[in-house]
Image (cartoon, rainbow, N blue to C red):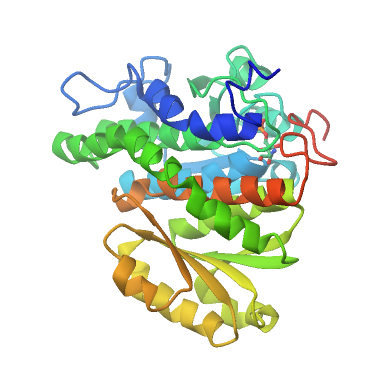
Length: 370
Ligand code: AGP
């Protein structure tokens, strides 16, 4: 068992550290030699079919759904086609409006989640084309979907998903760009810029991992609290949701993710002296708005950890109690970096509390019952 963990204390920590490799492997062979376009030869859908799609449903559970929320941002930004995201266990009970020009994207690490599989079947029954993003070749989802993009994260053992989630983000970046180039909403030079930034991500993750000790200290201090908040705007809100789920799942500390601007509509009432708030500020166009939301929490006594882009440390330090800086990338790609400190935060909080990090209570790695 120790050997399988490659010297790490837990599978989760090993898998967090495998993310640079998972990113590289998921991109491998899918970027043209000149770095100006995406190649996805595994897709059976034709360019004409892709051009005919004018709505997308992304359906998944848990962490995979959170990757889908980032996917929505990617597709809407790059392709300008409207995307809805759905909890798989709700999808087939709400009579979703599925037309022949709807693409349904199911996301599943295991490819065996019962609700996701049922949603896939319902979408096909209604005439939609289904694209699966999954980590397991030959899984039920991979076998039944019309098109498949395999994430090459490698086997994920820890119940808490880390490298599978972040590889799903890479798959969305690739697919979004491929689609955008097919329909012409992104030209080759714009794509080249995104692809270059994507190829820098593995090294940037390594840089974050080298600063794990900073996160460990914060995790130890939050482990004494019974409730905390993750806040963000735009795509940072999607990452906040993933950070909150991860923390709940393995540390059993109650937390909520909130769109930062929504706090004052109720949740602010829960902020009191010392309440930890993890604030994501990676979206430059929303930075000032985030600072004012942070002030609202600080005025009620919150203790704030800010996750910022490098270069913003000095300015942000005036408004937060602690800081963690992530390397600069394009706003679209920040989730692939900002999620890493949040994964480490939940790992070290769980560790500080003496929980079984890899096998949290009440949870299974793959949920094959509805
Ligand atoms: C992630 O940390 C969770 N264990 C859980 O939310 C998981 O992502 C969900 O059950 C979906 O699993 P899947 O990706 O295998 O479909």
